Image (cartoon, rainbow, N blue to C red; front, side):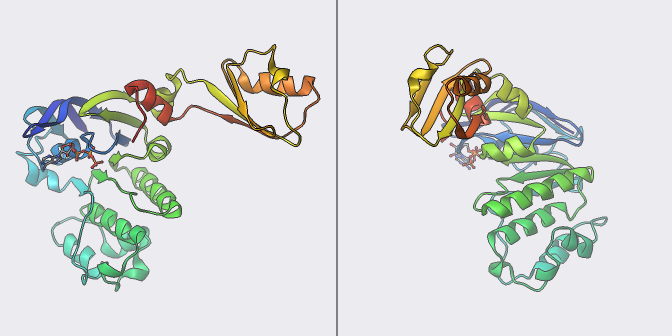
Amino acid sequence: MIEVESLTKRYGDVLAADGIGFTVEPGEIFGILGPNGAGKTTTVECVAGLRRPDAGRVRVLGLDPVRDRKRLRRTVGVQLQNTVLPDALKVGEAVALYRSFYSNGANPAQLLTDLNLEHLRNTPYGALSGGEAQRLSIALALIGKPRIAILDELTTGLDPQSRRDTWDLITQIRDTGVTILLVTHFMDEAERLCDRIAVIDRARLVALDTPGNLIAHVDAPQRVHVKTATPLDPAIFANADIEKIEGNGTRTTITGGGDLLRTVTATLLDHGVTATETRLEEATLEDAFLALTGRRFE
Ligand SMILES: Nc1ncnc2c1ncn2[C@@H]1O[C@H](COP(=O)(O)OP(=O)(O)OP(=O)(O)O)[C@@H](O)[C@H]1O
């Protein structure tokens, strides 16, 4: 659906994309993940035909997104960061206006229902909540019945419930056959939603894989958190293969490798200690990013 090869883009002295390459397969939710300023928006703007790369090759459905922008406008829906509409424009009017740009677009009433915007049809844009405004911008990206939807920083500024609702919505859109290119700087969003992720840092592609594989390749130590009714004596772990024990008596964090959870529970059992809570903290994409770049996600 999308092929990007050796994409390079500069703004004066700033190198925003430095030889980035990836392909997006049909039906994927493909994530572009990276910290602020990494070059994510620049990359998708080149895919959307809104910027011309300085070097490299971009193809969308086999077409050049800059040269064939008119043809691609019908098949690629774009929701860019901070879409702003006139405050007085009503939801129903915005959808009708955008629908008028396409000869074979979606049914506006159906789209409003699908995106849970029907009850807001007569509400002005300026009166919408953050989540409602985001749903409207997704509706506008989908109004032309695109085969590819490009969604940039979709859930920034939303409360946790609205973020989860938006994730469900993206999954439903993908299930209707739309391929999704999603830009995000949220690790949990990428981990939860994306089939594959291109991790971009300082204008370069540093990894490209499924969230599971990115995490599996991290050699991060595991941590087990234990809560006990009475203070835990760290000495009970003296014979076990443990790297570090930290805690304040009743809350202890044990770091180590191997089958750590089993080691910890067996040791507690051997010493007759009852844990009120035992939780294994697994590696996350955050650990993967740290392992790939040597620094924490800002
Ligand atoms: N029009 C522009 N003119 C000059 N510099 C720009 C322009 N657009 C982006 N940049 C710079 O290029 C770099 C990459 O920006 P870009 O917006 O692509 O990153 P991003 O990963 O999308 O970041 P964010 O998550 O903050 O949007 C940044 O250093 C940014 O300041």
